[in-house]
Image (cartoon, rainbow, N blue to C red; front, side, top):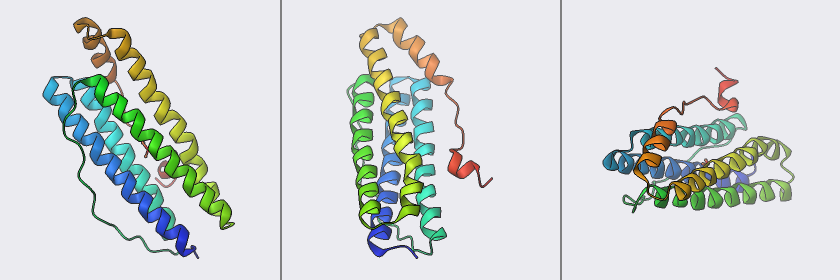
Length: 173
Ligand code: FEO
């Protein structure tokens, strides 16, 4: 049976992941507005991945005999100055998510919940990748420095990103 404190914290994390999904979908709409179809594709895949993260937590709570309680999703920003502004906000947001995952792990450790610690390890690794991806794109955009051809090439590169089911969900397919 899932400890009530852990159950509440994971429910809050489900909400945070759904908010992240909504944030990235909002960024995708802005990319479409700016004519960056490839960047929109990148954010649409982020949108799917965040929903996957919520689903991994959802399934975990159920598998431990807990109760998922879905709360309202707060409004997300809808406008950014340019692509660099969006990726900088992406990095900042992922750093916040990393600290939320770390807090959850610390709580699971305090409560001696080893199964939750084990489940969270995938998220700890995932956050390293999430931050690295955003940082790499910020570096590229700084190098491009608003150059039209550079933006065109980066957009083309991001159009090639493909979605794949994350391993905790793929294992169940
Ligand atoms: Fe669910 Fe982008 O971390």
